[in-house]
Amino acid sequence: MFQDITAQITFPSSSLQLVTILGVTGTLGIFSWQRWKQKNAYHALRSLPSPPRHWLLGNIPQILAAVKQKKYFQLLFDWSKQLGSMYVYWTGSQPVVVLSKPKVIEDTIVNGMRDGSLVRAERATKAWNDIGGPILLGQQGTEWQWRRKAWNPEFSSSSLSKYVEIISQACEQIIEKIREAESSKEVQVDPLFVELTMRVISHIVLGIPVNPKTASPEGPPLDVKKVYEAMSILSYRFLRVATGQKKWVKYLPTKDSQDYWAAKKYINQFITPRVDLALQIREQNNTNLEKVSSLFQESMLVKIAAKEPKYNRESLIGEAVELLLAGTDTTAHTLSFAVAELSLNPRVFQQAQSIVDQVWQNQGAINIESFKELSYISAIIKETLRLYSIASGSTALEAEREFSIEGQVIPRGTIISWSMLAAGRDPEVYSPKPEEFMPERWLDKSKETTQLPMIHFGSGSHRCLGEHLSMLEATVMLSLLLHHFDWELVKGRSSVEDLQQNILIYPADGIPVRFKLRK
Image (cartoon, rainbow, N blue to C red; front, side, top):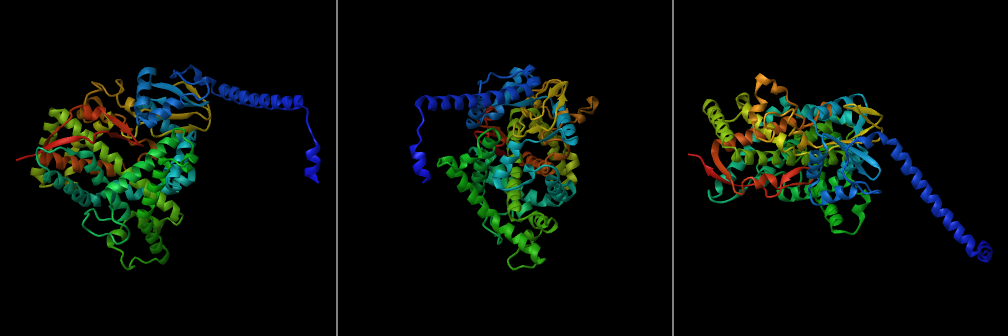
């Protein structure tokens, strides 16, 4: 009956036109009001330098194009050089303030997160959690605190010292692979360092033996190449979502989406059996289950599952994925750039080699006792991070309330990011010669440069969980390379100039090197 009545109702064409006009006018009015409101809210930022932008989309087209070309870090660096140490770009109507002075970055992070002015940017946290469930990097407040409290002791310098022998074993495997290559043959070092760091983090977190010939009964074996390819797909998706791509895009029938779901499935199949076993050990309070190795029982996964009941299956899987991501690329790519810079700087190479030889003569090996004598090698790692900050532009915070940076008013809702590549070359901080590779700047006490801001692992309570592990791995691996080999870059400086970015910056050519065994 209702259908019959409505079928008899008709509207004059002029009335329909009027309704349409009113609807369009109303929509435009609402849109214009929202634009005016947002523009007024961020009026204080209009005085900051800004790259040219689209009237509606802001700088989103440039950002997404840079991400697609894997040059997002380069875009921020270029804008820093053009626009200065503080500028703003716009993602639609939301502003992103980019900083590039080390001390300003450090103070902003530490003070802002301490007093609650800044929190992790919502878009970034959603992108992190989208990788594998609720994880440490995707949390705020108390949800972040209990997770961090659980992992902190495991990654302390004292706890990690017991892994020096394991790290040395993994490094020796890489040395042996280089030995097996003919002296005239090119060796891409970046994939080798990826193998090193993945084997180490997989051992520490998941209890997988570093020796690939040793079985791991708790789950599928570690296939470094396949796991790394899957992680690269997941991390590239993070960068796209964190810089503006909608999360639902992964459901579209595209090749990127197919690759994403295949990668996610593969990683889950690799990690899930081990997570399930760790939870089974927790529930049964039993470490004597059949087919459970002592390595697995001593892994961080089992320890964390046992001591933190808030962790469930989903969050432990996500955390394991996060740690594999964070514990592989960062140190691997830093080592690659360090090897390249040593080849490009013979003076530094010779001095480093002389120090390692002296330590070897005194200790007979690279061990925990020798680290105090390897401060120059640690300085090489720090100098590498200064010039090639692997995580440049991949982190962001959001203003919870209005505050100021260097006298500039920052309205609530503003995103705060930074270009670490630009910060690492700040002439006011890293003088003299900020563009040159000079490890001595980290050891020169006469100019108090021991207090140089080392912000490439982050700052404050959110400082990188794996800093000690990264420095330990890099120092051992670089020292062993210097002891056993001389080397030269096949492509020279172009290897450190052709860079790309997934979540992290990496050398596009894998850093091809020719090694020569020392007599």
